[in-house]
Structures are given as structure tokens and as C-alpha cells.
Image 1 (cartoon, rainbow, N blue to C red):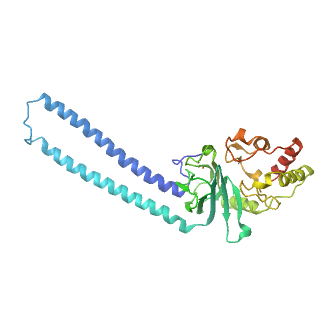
Image 2 (image 1 turned 90 degrees about the horizontal axis):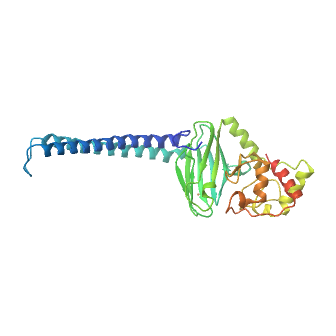
Image 3 (image 1 turned 90 degrees about the vertical axis):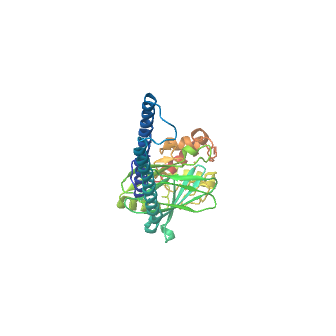
Amino acid sequence: MQSSMDVAGRQAGDIKSIWTLMLWICGVMYALVLAFLGWALWRARRRLAGPPTVEGVESAADRPMQRVLGGWIGLIVLGLLVLTFGSFLVDRQLATAANRADINIRVTANQWWWEVEYQDPDPSRSFVTANEIHLPVGKTAKIELVATDVIHSFWIPNLGGKQDLIPGRKNDITLTPMREGRYRGQCAEFCGLQHSNMALDVMVDSEAGYEAWRARQMRSAPAPATPAQAHGLDVFQTQACANCHQIDGTEAKGQTGPNLTHVASRRYIAAGVAPYSRGTLAAWIADPQGLKPGAHMPIVQLSPADLNGLLDYLDSLK
Ligand code: CUA
């Protein structure tokens, strides 16, 4: 699920090709160095066993050695030229990929979760989700990378390389997924206690599947369908939840935590800590520190009836 050798995107393919080229050239050089070392040792032992030679006088046996050394220098120069040219080509390929972007996404890294904003020139077609990225296969996405607190690093090994997210700076990375499937992204720069639990769920869908997902994400949250769900929405809006979280179409407009408009459509909670279910959500709300020590989600004291209503409501946000 998370391997830069299992290539599923054009940029990861470019990087793997330069990696393979480097491995071959450096591997062959290394094998040659060891072979020459073995030969030199064998030669020295043979010379010790033979008649003594005079220091500083060139013997007939040294002449082929000079030719070998000349060839070796030529080989090193050729190898370095091939590596330089190969990395130039791959670098250029990666740098120009953004010019063909079909989709624009902004990813904001936080301790310890990802905000993902799908941008559209028409604001009504923009939306915000968290800890997951959906991409259509064969299309190019330009992903703008920003951070709110400390330096993080964006890395989806199957699709492309790494890029840092630095507070006060805008970076970007371009991804062109070529194979449908589920992949895992991971923050690749130590950013605090929950650095390792800062995962990104990446779904590469067919174009139709992606468009269907996007159409669902653009909608506001569905209105509560049962009295328990209505009570849950009331709890969400009147307790601390709404201070940090937004649910489109309600009065909850908090901006410091993930947008929960379609939280029940996600596969994981808390940036990959646990698979999404009503049960894990209950555990997370009741004791965030138990599930993800150091997380900035506070404990909100709720009565069992309030917690059950809240779970009913959140679970309806498909
Ligand atoms: Cu974010 Cu490590």
C-alpha cells in the first residue's frame, strides 16, 4: 500500500527510473572496484613469491595496468555523465508536470492531520475535506502545500516524491496517478508526538467514480432524519465541538479542526489512527488522548444520551 517501488503514478515512475539507473551504474562500479582490489591483492602476493624487483623502475607488467587505469577513468566520466543527464531529464519532467494540471488542490498540514481543499474557479464547486485525497486516474493534480504550525513533509510513495510543507511558504507537488487503487500517504518529517499517526488515505478512482465522489462532497451536510440525530446536531452546535469543526449547512463553523461535513464517508478517523466506525468514533470523542496521545482534540464531557445522539448524527454525514 505504501511503496515507492510499486509505481502507480507518472512522477513515481520517473523517480523510480532514475533510481534504477543510479543503482545499476553505482552497482557495476562497486563490483568493478572490488574486482580490481581482489586482482591487486592477488598480484601483490604473486610478486612477493617471485624474484625481488627494484623500486621506482617500471616493469613490463605495469604497462597493461596503465591502460586499465586509463579505461577506468573513462568509465567513471561516462558513468557520471549518464547520471547527470538522467537526473536532469527527470528533474525537468517533474518540474514541467504542473503546467498540465487538470485539478488544483491545496493541502494544509497541521499537528497532526491534513486539511484538503479542492479548489475550483467557481467557489460553489470548491469544498474541504480532511486526511484523504481522491484523484481521477490519468489526470494531473497540482497540489499546493502549506503548513500552519511546524514543518511537515508530504509523501505518497506510490504516486510521487516528497515535498516539505513549511509555515509561511507555498510549495507544490504534481501527481498524475496511472493506476486505480488505494494508497497511503505519510508525513515524512518529524513534526511532534504524533508524527507517525499523520497518514493520508489516497484513493485513485475512475473518472466517473471520482466525479460521483466530488458531487457528494460538494453538497452540504444532510439534515437530521431522526429525533436522535436532531439532538446530536444540537449537541454539536451548543457544546465545544462547533468551536473547532465546521459542518457545511449548519451553524458549526470552527476552523481549527477537520471539516466534518462528510465525516462518515471517510475510511479512517484521526488521520489514519483507526478505521471509521460508530464505535471508533465513540472512543475518539470519549477519550482522544487514549487513541492519539498528544492530539489537540480536547475531551468534551457528554452525558450518554448526548454522546449517542452525537454519534447518530455524525454517522449520518455520509
Ligand atoms: Cu507531520 Cu510529521
